[in-house]
Length: 455
Image 1 (tube, rainbow, N blue to C red):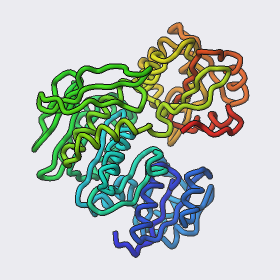
Image 2: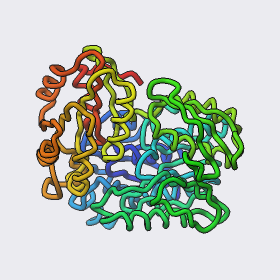
Image 3: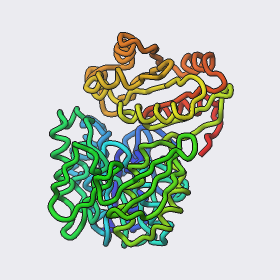
Image 4: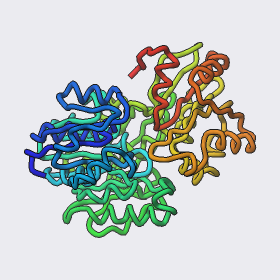
């Protein structure tokens, strides 16, 4: 893409699209966009000088050289239909990301069914603290760059690598990170074996002379990659290992980091959750590969306070603690509940918004048991993304399955009733988890009458 081109983004309010738009604008492209809803992200883009059309067909479709489309855009989208009719060049978000990444000397791509946003943020912070001035493209907002994007130098490009629809195969990386592989996005992949094949292709796209950093504890992760590979582990299986794991503070962990059997340093994490040890050890692997000192790594990981919507704490209500997390897959929900169990003094309640009808249907057995240990589940109406109810199971179907399994659950389609029932339950020592990857974040604001969160 020549940087005198006019690029128009469909679904520019998406977390990845917005970051791409800002980076490309800083590289000299003329950027416009459209989205079906107004949002804080859209307003931020507009403040940066990007013209965004909301909930209507933009005239920029006719003028743009290239149309960049996110996976959330359906085939019958009016702007996409018009772009095709006009014969416009159309590329996907993942193709644009791959073309952008190719402009950098070193590309670090973080893949995995869970944890990639947090791990990308950890790596990015370590690189920033080491003074390497990376360009960062991340699927979540962090405080150290005041958002989801940092336009740095041309030496280092750090990005998430999304597996959905094989998006990450557009990337050719110097360091390819594979955190884990589990059943997800079965509407596209159909089965676990296809997911494993896709991740194997991602690893094979690593540049000659590059490395694959992989989880040696995950049985679904193949360690037989062409070229150099480095395993990380919590069970002494990898080149980099976490040992002597301790809960040094309620919900927060420390560990000794070993490299080739030799103790490197002790690490204390500033974020909640035992699962973040895996994310941290993966980040350490990448940092060491680029010669960053263990002193900087140690300090950076302690100072890292997490990603927005990743076990993010809000002000207490009725002396109960409130947390919001992006968890929308059963494995992620289990991790969030485990953290809550480690710090709760009373009951745990969950507000959950299912993300897509197909995921609920295809992982229904896992969803039915993943809320074990929770007093009650309040299920808000399904976030459809690109789908329609006919594609799977909605919130009522999930509640029916949960109830049949003995879990107390109720479905809601309005915030007012949901808020009323929650406030009648919460008491001192309880924890409320608000979980989901859709628009359930807006319920947090509703719950507090627009009171700002503790982030």
